[in-house]
Image (cartoon, rainbow, N blue to C red; front, side, top):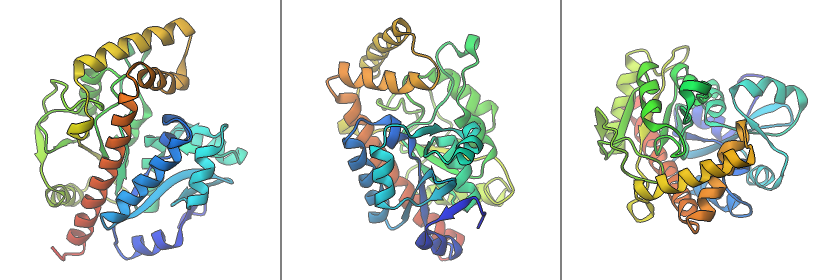
Length: 313
């Protein structure tokens, strides 16, 4: 393994044997969910992966290393420590050099996962083109990293606070396949509907694994290659919100952020906090439900993919 990467021994053994492993980001733990419930959600996501038959590899930066497969103690540290850096791909070198702890975004998680040999990442929603990005050029590094990294990311679309139509256009421009899981529509994070149609769909983990295998055989998904894939999974029906309700909440939250002068990496956590407060906690519960659902689905796909990769199915 790479000298900069510390891989938990059971995960290293699974990867060496072609076993199913799912990478999980840690920014959602440190910055995306309120304390103290963030720790419970992180452990629930790991449990969902295990219950589906795969190993969970939560990723973070600790003690000058890229750590793949946090222990429960390390997850607790990331969840409880207030000054954990938000580590995107452009931050990794500086955080490693400083020795400061860092919680990895989707972009950084995908980069580290691919470097360790993990093909599948689960998260809530990816970053994308921000509202007003036609003027600010504020587009998440998640998109560029997925475009050049050999991973499949299971998510509920992009975060609802973003410009979803523009995000979908950027995904297409970058050549990232977007595949709906039991849906013909790009999910809008808290909402199952977005009015953004998808061209491709799968309905079982086995179908998704077959698609990933073909993507790999074409030369896209594998060591030394580029172009990942998005598998978008709508939030569970019982926890989904209507798109109209979410848009109303977002408008109020964006206005509050502008009035408070919130900028840069602080915007997303601020907006999520506003949405949770103004929705009476409904957006938070939807976020938690989709995180666990995506972790479970990613594990099912990882298990099916490992069988196909080994030629056993």
